Length: 113
Length: 109
Image (cartoon, rainbow over all chains, first blue to last red; front, side, top):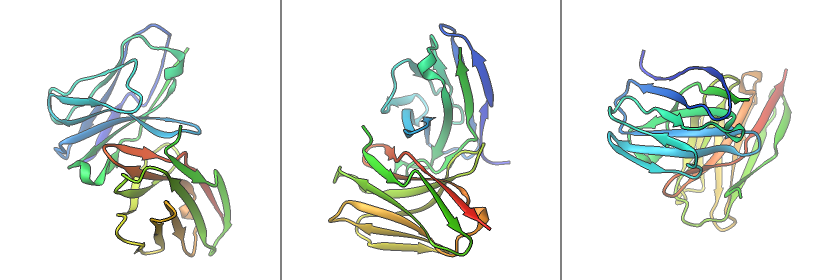
């Protein structure tokens, strides 16, 4: 089925550990996004990518690293997790920026102890 | 600081009633204003969107009203149904999308 798949759906880890959240889309959309969702803040953009090997920072990029070697995959890595990074993370895609993120995955709920 | 301010935080409406959610912004460079609907455990889904050269857009029971001079826009859900119970986010775009904090809508049967 076409769509965006995020994995894992749930993750618990400890401060200081590295954790990678995966995102895979089947539409071949050029744009992909990572957002975090926190109560009272809505969704905030972490990083986005316009195409393979092209990435750029969003509103809250500190502590996160992304890569995009293939159009369909856009992993997000927390190199040394902190408790403030406890959140729900959403990956999204769009055929272009004109309409913003159009399709979202179902999210990864990440808890950092 | 929130670039898009959304109100109310929560809203309870009777079935068949009109749900109204409001958003305000400051940045006049915003050029695209979407609304997203999110059900528990799911990602947001694009619901309806408007550009600032239009004052109103209607899709089925959902209408966006846009007031450029007041820098405000709102979502109206006519004949609200229990299945509309969800969290709604407004957003506004320049180089990237900025989201409101969300409104949790409950439609009582």
